[in-house]
Length: 294
Image (tube, rainbow, N blue to C red):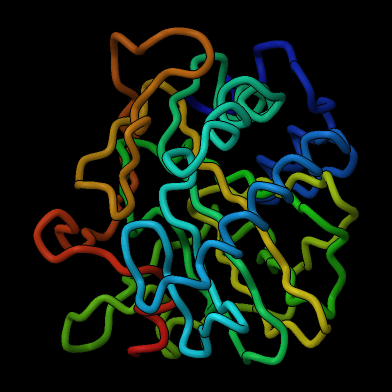
């Protein structure tokens, strides 16, 4: 669906002003959308998995493990395929307000794509370089939106997401090195053409939802606080968007319709998209491993 078609449908959760801001800026930071009860339950589930990671030595299908990980001091960078880890994570993806928020941004027919829970640890210099999402998992159109939920209050010290306004209307960049290897980030040469100083931090209290269009340039700085920042991320698209390459992080729920109906006709956006590696053949670690290798 086009933005005009999406906006022609009544809003379910967001205000009209919030929806228009998303389409104009390429992202939205909306406070007070997720209830305290949901935040508490998600935090409790996150804590259980962090505690369980103490017995894990290396990255596997559940955990992306950081270099400082130990039984005494867990360092989990990502909980993979989140909706497959515990029922609560899929319940949140399909039975909370989250897919209704997605419907306000992608249209009434909503398809689930993927999810993960990222952790940013203090003092680890864990910078996420500037990147766009869609080059890793291209679709027939650019409706996919990532919805992140603050499980605690997020301030500048915690290394919040930073989005470059209106970059979704600009070019898509090839996230590879000169020799063709996947880097998961925009090259320094391409970054020199952008005004990154306009980036806006996605700060807010617990329960804030951050919506990022798949074309929007974003990244995050180091966490200089003394607490970990946990951020569950859920990706949805319009039902008429179809992936044309294998997803890097598939789940058992990928492709399920969580609101409305399946599409009978695909919407194909004529704007070009770079082709990622075939993840089904080479496997996918995470954006952290790709960027650190680079």
